[in-house]
Length: 177
Image (tube, rainbow, N blue to C red):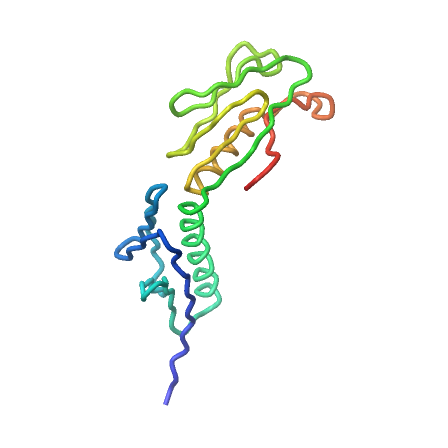
C-alpha cells in the first residue's frame, strides 16, 4: 500500500481581514482589497476555519519552492491590509537644486544635474507618494506596486556619463517599514 505524501502549509487569518478563495485569492480589510491569481498545477489553495491552507501531493523540489512563494505572497497581501508598506527616500543634491513634485500617476524631477528636460518616474496602482522638503515617502497596500514605484523613482535619477564619486545627486532609499 502506497501512503500519500502531503505537504501542507497554513496561514492564520487575523481579525478584521476577510479572505475568499475561488479562481483567485481575494483579501479584503479596512484599508482596501487585493486580488491575485495563483496558477500552479500541483498546489491547492483552500480556506478552512480561520486559516488559509496550501497543499501539494507528492511534492518535488519545484513544488516546495512554489508553495513557499505562494505563502509569502498571501502573507504580504495580509500584511499590506493590516499595516501597509512604507518606503522613505531622501533627495540629495550638491550641484544643482532639484525640485520634485507629483502629478496623478507620475513623479516629476526637475533641474536634475542642471538638465533642461524633467525626468519622470511612473507611480503604479494605488500607491501614494508624499514629498515634504527633502524626504519622499512612498506608501500603499500592495508590496509589489510600492516597491516598483520606489525603484522607478530611484532609477529616474540614475547618473550616466559622469563620475559617480563626484556626482552623488539623486533620490535614495533610506528606510523600509
